[in-house]
Length: 200
DNA sequence: TGCACGATGAAC
DNA sequence: TTCATCGTGCAC
Image 1 (tube, rainbow, N blue to C red):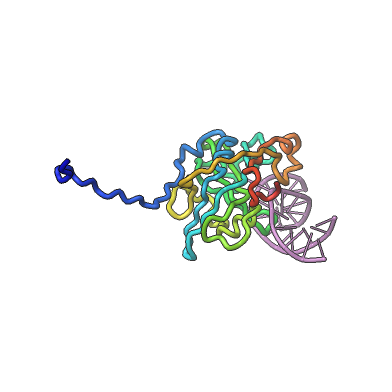
Image 2: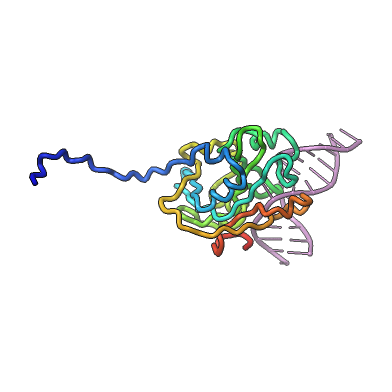
């Protein structure tokens, strides 16, 4: 066979391009998004370098009817991001000290979000990442990223090259005891046996 | 305009 | 178990 007769295919260069998850990923049932975010990579490109963490723990906040959700206060200056379009970051200060990072879910106006509680370090992370406040500190996330579109090139969530299989554990959410029966709902999800989960 | 309190983390 | 510390929402 004379191989010279065939066109030499262009070399396929596998670019390490990390595509942000599409908005349609977020515009779905919040519990589903919370579960499917497990194993995904949170990426923040800063002047100090790129920081990447594997999401290992999340909590679902379902909407205004969910007494543990900020959106249960209704549409306010603070909660307007939660009622906005999906795929945006909702970052707020808690206890005057710590930041918490959420992603808005469901169609606009729904008022739901998923709290990111813990990461497994992948790249560029030098401090602890177990717990929502530590996660934000390690990733360099603060209120300046509130309302940030996660379909951007500097701050986004992407699927890893290889999604290793894992078991998901569902538990009640942390620190929402005031939310009556909502405090008992199994809306916290984490990767079983992962050492970076905040409170196994 | 004032005040109570929280999706936490760290020290004690 | 206590405390640091302040934005937010709501009462007044």
